[in-house]
Each structure stands twice: as C-alpha cells, then as structure tokens.
Amino acid sequence: MCVINYMEMARVTGVPLPYLLSRGQQIKVISQLLRKAKEQDLVLPTQRVDPGDEYEGATVIEPNKGYYNMPIATLDFSSLYPSIMMAHNLCYTTLLTQNTIQKEGLTPDQFIKTPSGNLFIKSTMRKGLLPEILEHLLGARKQAKSDLKKETDPFKKQVLDGRQLALKISANSVYGFTGAQVGKLPCLEISQSVTAFGRMMIEQTKCYVEETYTIANGYKHDAKVIYGDTDSVMCKFGVESVEDAMKLGQEAAEFISEKFVKPIKLEFEKVYFPYLLINKKRYAGLYWTNPVKYDKMDCKGIETVRRDNSPLVANLINMCLQMILIDRDPDGATEYAKQTISDLLCNRIDISQLVITKELSKTDDEYVGKQAHVELANRIKKRDPGSAPQLGDRVPYVIIAASKKTPAFMKSEDPIYVLENNIPIDTSYYLDNQLSKPLLRIFEPILGEKKAESVLLKGDHTRTKTFVTSKVGGLSAFTKKRETCVGCRAVLDREGAVCNYCKSRESQIYQKEISHLNVLEEKFSRLWTQCQRCQGSLHEDVLCTSRDCPIFYMRKKVQKDLEDHGKLIARFGDPEW
Image (cartoon, rainbow, N blue to C red; front, side):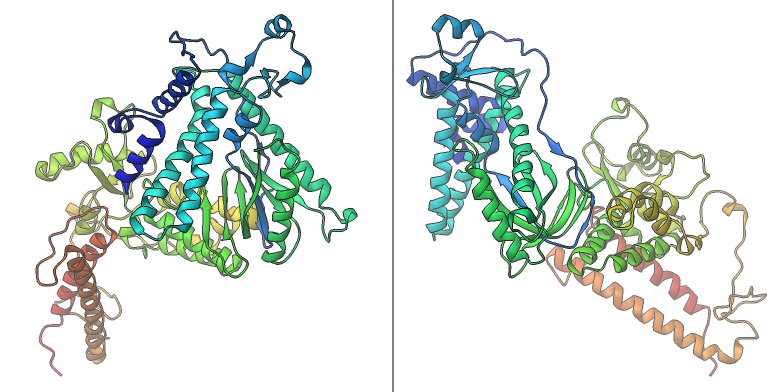
C-alpha cells in the first residue's frame, strides 16, 4: 500500500520516486509550478527572496470548556486554504503593488485587497498559476474519490485511495510552500493573506450561526459556537437528539456556504455526543456520522497514545473517557480514577503498567542534561555489558523509591532487575508526574478547576500506602530476615510455616495457599501460551525478551511469584494430618 501511495504521488507531482523518499514537500510544489509556468512561457526566479517578518497564523476561538451532554455539530471548511487561494486568485503572478495599480490604471473592481492589506488582481483579468494548479489537484481528487466509490476491485481501490490521498497532500502543501521562509520561493503576501481570510471566515461563521439560529428567528434554542479551530467550528444548537443536530448542521453549512466566494464551501461533517471540551486542541467525544449509532470515540490532544508515558496513563485515561462518554457516568469515572490511584499507592498495580520506554537516540555527550534512560543504560553497561542497550534501542525503565531530593534520572531502573530484587516503586512519582496532569485536564471541565484536585488527588484513597522491602541497597545487606507465621504474620522462633496459635488450623491455611498456588500456575500457563502463540509455535520454549511488551513483564512477575510461593509451600513440609 505504501508503494502504491508513493507511485501515485510521483504521478501527481511529476517528481521521481527517490525524491519522495529523500526530499520534502517543496520539491513537489516546485515541480508543478515549473510544469504550469512552462505552459505559459514563464520562468521562475532563482535568487533568494527575503521573506521579511513573520505572519499571524490561524485563529482559534476561545473554548467554552465543559462536559456537554448534548449533541455538538461540527462544521468544517472543505480544503480551506486551497479554496481561499482559488477563490481570491492568490498567486505570485497576481500580486500587485500600489505603483503597479497606478501604472496600469487598474480600477477597484479589477483587484482585491485582502484582510492583511495585500493587493491581488482578480481572475477575470489574469488567472494565477497557483489557483490553476490547485484546481487541477482538487478536481482530480474529486474524480478519484468518485471512482473509488464505484470501484469493486480491491487492488484498484487501493490505487485510487492512494491517488486521492496524494492529491490531497499536494494541494495542502501549496500554502505551506508560500509560507516557508527558508524555502525555495517564499511569498509572505500570499501566506499572510490566506491566514487572514481564514481568520475572518471563522469569525464570520461564528457570527452567522449565533445570529441566525436564535429563538427570535423561530428556533427552539439560541445557538452557540463553543469552539473554533483553523478550519472548523463546533456549534451547540441546544437540541437533544443527534438527528436534529445533524439537520441543523447541514442547514447551517449550506446557508453559510452561500455567503462566501466559490469554491469556498462549509460542510457539515459530524456530531459529537457527548462532548468533553478540555482546552484548545484538546477534546474528546463520541463521533457520529449517522443518527443510529456512533462511529468511534474520537480523542484529540489527550495522553492516550504517547510512548513516553507509562501504559497506566493511557489505560486509565481511556477507561475514564469510555465511562464518561460511552457509559455517560462521570461519577463512576471519578470513582474508578480514585480506585486506580489507591491501587498505585498500595503497590497493587502490575509493573508492566509502570514501564516507561525512551529511545537512546544520542551518545552521552550529545544530551544536554542527564536523562533517566541514558543513566540507566550506563548502569546496565557496568552491571552486564553484554545486555546493555545500544544506540537506537528503546530503553525500558521504572522509577524506584529513593530519598526525596534524589533526581528522577538517578531513580530509573531496569524493570526485570526491580522484579528480581523486590525493589520498591516510587508510586508518588507516578502520581505526581504521570497521572495528575492528564486526570485533571479531563476532570476539571466536569468537576470544576478547584474541586477536581481535591477530589482526585487528596482524600482517604491517598492516605494508605504500602511499602515493600528491597533485597538490595541501603541496610538490606546488614539485616537478617526472620520467618513469620503464614496465618497471623507473627514472628516465628522456630522453623515451620505457622505459630503455635495457628497450628490447629494449619490444614486450612495450607489448602488456602495451595489454592493460591494453583491460581498463579493457571495465570502463568495462560501468559506462557499467549507468548507461544505470538512466537508462532505451541510446542517450543518462549524465547521472547521484548521489553516493549507488557505480557513479558507480567509473565516474569508471575514466574517470580510462583517461585516465592513454592518456597512458602515448602515451609509446611510433609503435612501430618
């Protein structure tokens, strides 16, 4: 599929395949410009042009943060920046100055003045190269998408999908080409005019929606635009059903599209219901394109896939979002988050959920500051040079407990080493540096900014903590462990498993521990079989040592628990009942 996409991109832009792999977007636009310029007997300048100052980017309407348990319609401008360039004939060949206007004797109806104050001649006088290129690209994409819907052959569908994607990327890269200040042919007048038109259109769309869809005009509720970003606006029409929101969204898109110059078109794309608006470029909601059933849970800017966070963060955030959005149970999500925090502080979270991985992308000297994964790689090199991570490897680590002033880079440790030596995890680090900010971002719109922290990060669920005794470091080398009673945990003065007080129910305690051993064996067997299937054979030993796989750490943890529990069972000796 990747090869097909590259082939279609090469066909669309006229660029050799090797260039697509080794060079960026600018070569594609240059190639198309040269093609079009040759048709009109024009040449491109080769000298560098000073682009001048930076320009203002796209607008973002300040979000009304909150949890919306009602449909939110999303209106999007179709190919906004290419459409603006075509509608207003923005090009190198159509850019004017006041001197040119006076010299040529142009009248005001023959040119336009953009919101940024730049001047361009209208297409009725001269059609620009960039608008022609964009018309060709978007027209070809429309045809490819139309053919894709009709096509039944799987291979041809892949080709057509690759083609429409290549056309889309090429069209969108034209604007970026004009705004690249270190590019081949920057033109600040074009790029700042495009973004100025975009900002103006987003603001106009907001005004049209809020002024048209009102109770005074016969609608049931006053509409409100709760958020807008670059090329889309989120509208709250106040209706309760997804179907009604879709109808109003479609109506608004058609009505507002008529207000703008063609081919600029506002489209109704989707409805979010419910909708959690966290901040600029951070939101989540159930994505509806038909009123019968939602398509998916859509998340933007939320910590659900970042690899430099522990899996615990992604799993907790995903579960909370599912409970908030799918189950419509914010209170249940709050309780689940509190229980997870309690489990973390009491060491009930599996170590596989706490592993952080980062790439060893540089040598020691190239890193500006000390990094946790780099320091760990150096320690592993001293302990076992044969298994030390190499440049380019991803280094898995967990943060272990240490004194309060110990920096994080000194607290990183290999998860397997932690398991083997029973080293305690710094659970407070995970709560303060991994969980707290993502959780507060999600729950502040629901609980309120002041209340969220007190509910989630303070309270009874944070007061109980469990600490484990390490086998290495500190005073552990100078201590001697004494056995305790399996039944009541009292210190034993003799060998055995139970004290004199628990001797009468030794058989019950033994049966209980045997049952627990069976549970561990069953769990290990399931994990072992899962690893065998992943490896491709159910009849060979598992040789996998993938440190990125959570099953690997779960298997190692259960294996160690089995060994420890086997030793505990052995303390009972041969039962005398």
